[in-house]
Length: 204
Image 1 (cartoon, rainbow, N blue to C red):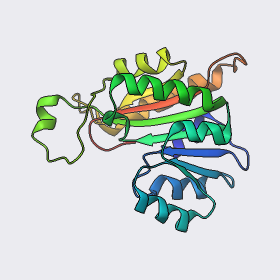
Image 2 (image 1 turned 90 degrees about the vertical axis):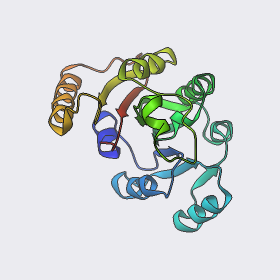
Image 3 (image 1 turned 30 degrees about the horizontal axis):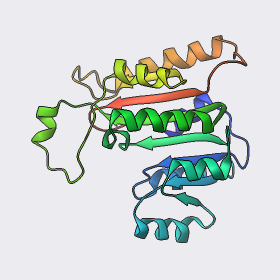
């Protein structure tokens, strides 16, 4: 996902990378190596995890709310927003509020990279889970949600959907999107870029 984000945005040294729901911190660690000396930030609720991140990443900015992140970095102060398997745990109203706030925080031509599961309720009920999924996504619905909150959607693919198209399909979609992006000149008035993935299983 971070590799994809780099295809759609340019990140100068000290660009801010925000991870929403960072889990064990894998994406934060990857960003620290793949982006040029990024300033790391995350939204995390677990106190033990917060302590671990501060020990591991030093001066990382950690908050339990998007509003605190906005207060710290201001409008258009975040250059890369990343979230994997987090947004399905919010209601649609909470998501709209969150995405609107993130859109305000995201720098012009910044990148929002999302990975969300796509699954039917019936299938999900058969799976063991400790945290409920409150919303389910389709590519069409995810794009509509993002656009309604002010994002420009550059790429939205199902990596392992019902069609079971597999990796070849994803690679084809990536090539077409990247080639199209290179042909188009950037509109200076355009909303910030978003790169999204709707995934039923693994991510990119």
